[in-house]
Length: 328
Image (cartoon, rainbow, N blue to C red):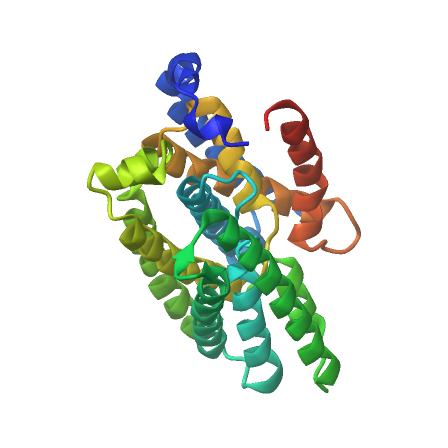
């Protein structure tokens, strides 16, 4: 199942693409940005730029932020655990962050700062639980982490539904939080909070990228990595904690968006190869583009705006089935 991670022929087969691949990824993102500005239920007019600038431009920024970060985190976690089925949702971080955010929305004041704080603390708490469940006789295995993450993900999803059942407030905002959206309305306070979050996301993304060499070494084996001086425990803890922060930042603004962090790293790996020096930034660019295209469909394909996870699942599930049948 780990062939795409360790097979060196990927570097040879994709060497020609890597020479021009960055150019096409940037072009794809530019096209996604232009179409996101131009397309919408009310159309586009140069005489009235209020809707493109006040409504669609923030969605573009959020789409780049969420799609890029989720894909980058997915690539890092897949490389760390050497498991192509891993993404933030699989490890329970997204469900934990969504639970914290739903608590803030339903029982708190619902301010963006409170949502962000509860989301982050709940994501960190989720990591602690996953680690505790996965630890068996003092050891943590990669398979144990994945299984513990799946169990904890179901737990927090159920707790979120339980909170919704006992809540007496309207549930529309919470429901969209669980299915993903880019419709956050920016006020001066929200914009300040998002700016801080974006800066933290950039720092966290750079931190994850700094582990690219360790992730490449881990693709051989954990024993070989330790013999080469890689502190696997420190690397694992660092990537998990930073990933929880990044996922919490995304969930607090856009809710849970499925399949992006799972599928995009696979596509980039097929194009660029398994080297994390190109895989991680490539996943960010492609993830941002794909989520913008998904948002365009969510806004224009139906009379009402569709939740993003519906659109990403409709395209992500067939691709993953193809990947399962042909590559894994």
